[in-house]
Image 1 (cartoon, rainbow, N blue to C red):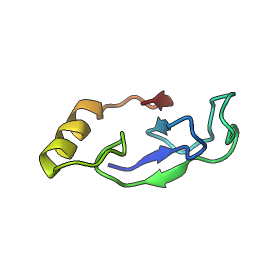
Image 2: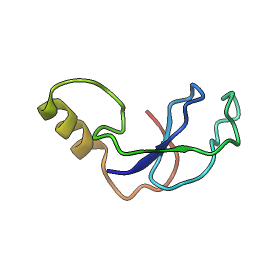
Image 3: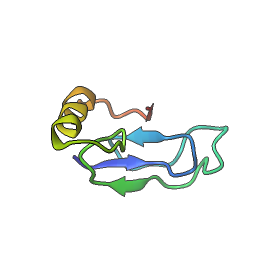
Image 4: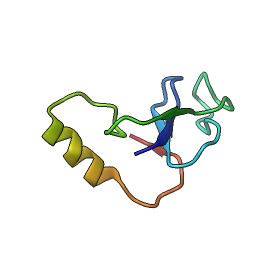
Length: 67
């Protein structure tokens, strides 16, 4: 599932391209990076755990979500 992340420390995740919206983040206003990992939480674990993470966090929410 393609999503977009901030690597500035705020852990922002969005379903659409954009910029970091966390004013206290060092990367505020910088473009989010595309990520195609299976878990929007960017966790490690077994394939079953990662699939469960993806099911729980998937949806049509286009807003920036801190995880």
